[in-house]
Length: 421
Image (cartoon, rainbow, N blue to C red; front, side, top):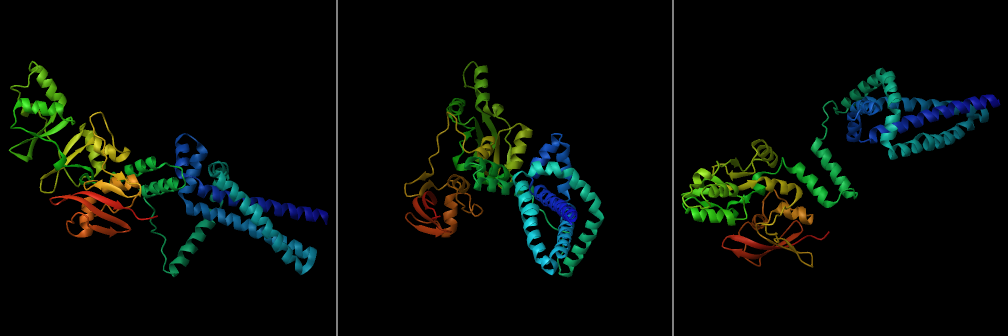
């Protein structure tokens, strides 16, 4: 009798260990990071490559593990029930149920899954060869089960043959948001990563320097005047226009101007700046930042003129403008620090009307809708459905906007009271 008890106990213990193996393997292989495993596989780790192939077909993997897990659990429970009935009679069913529930719950479920979720990559790499063998052995049965499952779901009008998977961008965004929420990323790093993903969605009209703020050179000015403007301007490249500011005929580069003056015995007199200017590059305002960045890199350029659908000059875009969308404002010794957005002690913000909504959202972690307008002035005008006067207030989506200053038809200063969190 003692030998029989030892044999049954040994078999049940072995089955519980197998159940724990299946449970831990399932958790490890589903919780492991695909990107981390892919990087390890690229580095030459053969087991990582095996894990990568296993998780690529997750339906077959989970099916095989669940099949094995249920087999050993049911077998262990059946043996334990039969054994306890022999020992204690019909009440042995209750004993078997209580004891097996406790053993399976603790040693076959919670313990292995807790360890696997704590060290998913380590466990996944160790169990991968055995799970691969299991998948190969159970593949015919798993295929049969999959057919039964799909047919059953179709009876209820559910078709899983054309399920959609989230895009890589959405997956990366979700990971960034999660890490930022859990404290794994500081705000500046999160903003930069989000901005990189936004490059294909943001158009040039959203970040360009508007034409009213663009410094340009009149080709009709004297050579001395053009030279003086070129060397005193804080900008390296200046659009050159003739007859009409919309008629831009070239781009003057400060270095080319200095080279030409040096070649002319140090004098600007008599220089023809039309020959010094380079050919302008025109790009539509609907071009995405990602496309324009690729153009700048391929053409080895840093500067382009933005036009609308009618060919009218709208503004300029530079390589620095695109980089600033990723890393934030870049200042050099010739730039003036921007003080457009000022945070008051009561939490309100005073900013100029031409401040971009995207910049405010990024700076203050707001969620103003930048689809309806690019600047905060345009946002207020859209809410008011007119050009408001100073001291007028408007509320929208929990925010309060007060127009502080207006010049002609342009809102120049706005007070924003953010919604309370």
